[in-house]
Image 1 (tube, rainbow over the protein chains, first blue to last red):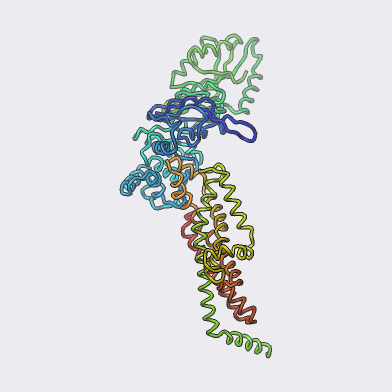
Image 2: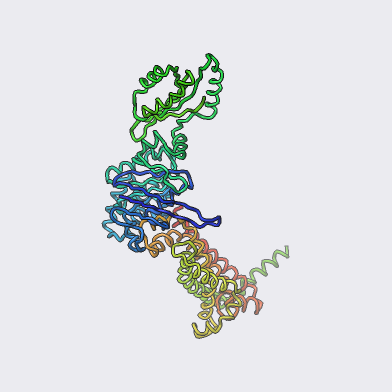
Length: 349
Length: 234
């Protein structure tokens, strides 16, 4: 549905040239909910604004469906933009139009006849559950309701693509959850392709089928959300995943662990203890794996912490354990786990 | 006790001197002032707001960015605004004569008043429209709005309260300017105050003129504030 090829964008700033996007290539199939995540300044907003060409890229191709957008003249581009809905972090509702008037705006712009506007707006408002607030002004409704208005407005021209630029970043967790559920529901009902720009890993985890990780204007990792979460490859991804899932031990906990490792050291010559971090996707037979590991390498294993996250309906576990045994056996633990496709790292020894 | 009686006598005498003739003069003058302020105010709105729109949308980085045009307009606006009104009035007499056919009287006074009010209104309108959140313009453009649609569906309606407040400020300034215009034969309340109150030593006329001006400004301001409150929806 959305094809982005070798997209680059540079800004001239007083401090020199700034490469906002560099050779981005992405393919987003129809009906997918696709996440673009990255720390602030990674180029996410520039990327999303390039998709509907609110920002003119320096080079590269943007194609929506069969239509290549790059290179279109302004008026052709305006027509194409009607097929692309957009929602924003700060909602961007017109303060002097009612909820109804805001949803009607894109239809007025597209020149839809008045009678049709009315029925379309009524339908859209009921879709987002705001029919009862049609006559309110944005100042009179809550943030979550404002974003629902934003969503109704973005869907008004029956777009093929919905771009979401940090749409939940200004909302509290509960409201975020309900907005994401609404987007998911709309995606399933209408088949609209959704592109979610966000810095919140939990947003990606909750609704994105696939995700691209952006760092310094480059797409450093693209894949199924589940894969990216359970086995992050790039260091930026890893940092974000651990921050979002709280699946890493805090520094103070690690200190305590190291302390205890040191105290137990020397209980037998050549005996050592290490703390390992395992990522498990799906509810594989963890119990069996652990006893297998313990038996094969003659290790004694203690679980320090274990937690399971729900990513797109698939449980993903993080397990911290102390393994004790001979140095040689401990050295073999990581390769042994890798052979069984379990992502493991050593966090302390 | 006698001081108080004297005071009462002088006050009642004061009002005794307000004859029906003076009241009739006051009425005519008020209408002249209203005509001058009304017409030049209307011209200021009709020309100043579009000029303000031009200043906003041609700004560097704005929707129809055109820094050269923006600077030129800015220079013209600033030049007009930096000339004191008394000087402007006299300086453009040939232009006034060309437009109004005369340089004396209420109709003639409307020309310099309009010339002064247009750039004033333009700057105020520009500031009001700058207050419109850029995000709204981004949203409208993302919907496929043309620049004209952005102006008429977003920028103007969203800044309407500010534009209205600006119009009130312009009208109040125009009431002041119109008194100055009166001093050189434009008619209106200022003219009345100068000729009767000052030159003929009739303090009661001066007082009346001042009171009427205060009431007029107050009325315009209150009405404006009320309407702005009604339409803001903030």
